[in-house]
Length: 185
Image (tube, rainbow, N blue to C red; front, side, top):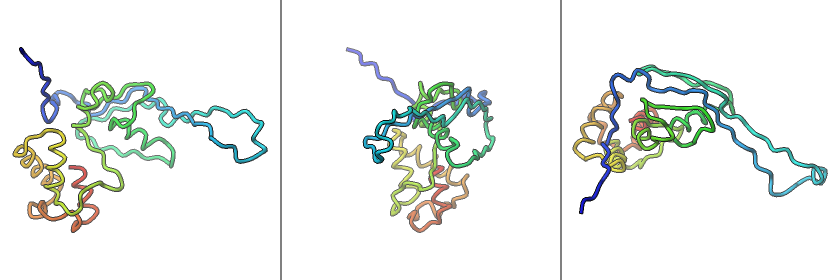
């Protein structure tokens, strides 16, 4: 009896010929405002409530090349966080197409999750553990072999400017900036 097992590499293959890191084409995300469960004001009791839609992202098209650095700026409520959540596969777009290194964020969400990292204002870590220990933990979640993970972690942390002697120090003893660098790794 043969068992067919789909084994994926720990890190997805990114073709070196892929010039575009991110392609967003006609992306739209709409949130529908829900009706309140209770009516607090008697004056509104007899009125029919309008169904409201909020277009958080409206027909956005952009291409970001490999190694290009881009900032997303806008006022509160302009859709920045919604766009980032779509790129990081936390939200599904209502229309349009988004790909990261050629992988569709909806159809290939697991692959995209292995390729990118999203850092929010409050990085989530085990503060008593070192950067190496935190990142080894994350690597195991993605089935990355320990030896390979350690080499890659040292390489990435080095590129981010974290000195080798700091890799074993607890995160709680590091500045917020250093903690954010570890989150990027």
